[in-house]
Length: 294
Image 1 (cartoon, rainbow, N blue to C red):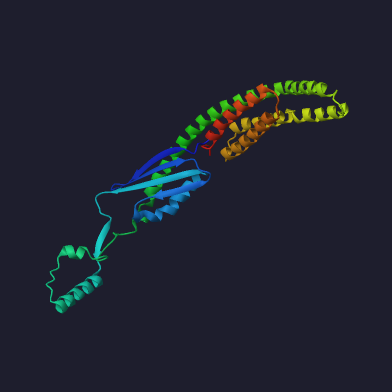
Image 2 (cartoon, helix red, strand yellow):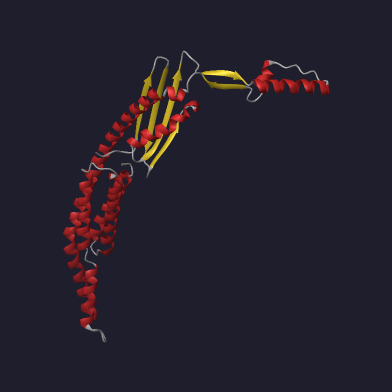
């Protein structure tokens, strides 16, 4: 099954007075790159969230957003740092005595004292207490994300499959022209040999040897055979249900590009060269799309 690396998923789970919403977005990436954002008091969830994502996905840049809504209870209580308050009041009184300044303290002044009021969770650790519904929300979001990636993957598979079929037709055309290309090169060299064979100091036998060597260099039969083999490999990968299809497909695409480039450079036939250029253009479209496949 082909899977795209682009997708979105949302999941929600709740109790009577708490609801957790998980949003997951993924785009293409060479490796699995996970970023998690959640409320600060639930940061202990992050390693577990990463574990859930790793068990589900193998590649892609993944952004996870968790939102926790609580009602009917605050979830936190406020405590006064009494040693700090006593020290603050004592030092304030000393300043008043030493300077004679009228220092009138208000509650607003106390609110400005750093760390005087400490916010702490009420009851048990909320991250541990609520992990169950957070995990359920994550599972729901991952299921939706996978369905989204699967649907996009099938669309990419259809598009790339049509493009590979088009490349196979172009490769067949190049192969049918390969013999004509060699005959064209031989005729051209024969004309050249005839025009210079009568010149003084030119060895006709040596000329024929050099011509044969150059004609062999222009032969693209091997490139056409390798091209056919690589395209067959691409066709097989279209039906592959294994992992890392995208990486393997991308490797074969590079091999196809190399054979097309070599055949185009060696060919003396204008139609072969133009077909190779068209094939490389189509191959570039495939290479761009395959980057989104897991």
